[in-house]
Length: 141
Image (tube, rainbow, N blue to C red; front, side, top):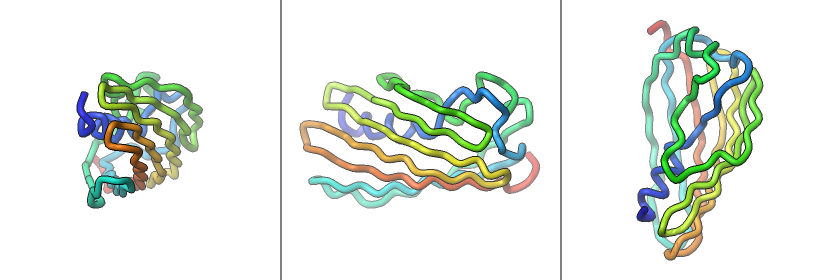
């Protein structure tokens, strides 16, 4: 897996977990914005990604509900889930290196906010990525 794929897998892995208790998230149409900054030997401009998603009440009570899927080559090492948020650690491995991911997401009813810190070790050197995650309920689906 090339370095770009490793970075993409790391970014796509945010935030996730099978939720053990109903999260403090109001059902409806949500907009999520992820802003990622990267520091390292290779200059990479900041990137912002925004997407919308409909979250139904049934999703929130489903024990298999996840915000995003774990990409191939990634392993969830630790996660702590409560109604108010999630903390997790992951490792994504590829031929080019590996990424260590530490994330925290707070569930605030009609908002969510969090940070994901990623350290990538590759043949191109070490890179640090910090992603600020913000989400807000826009209304009904």
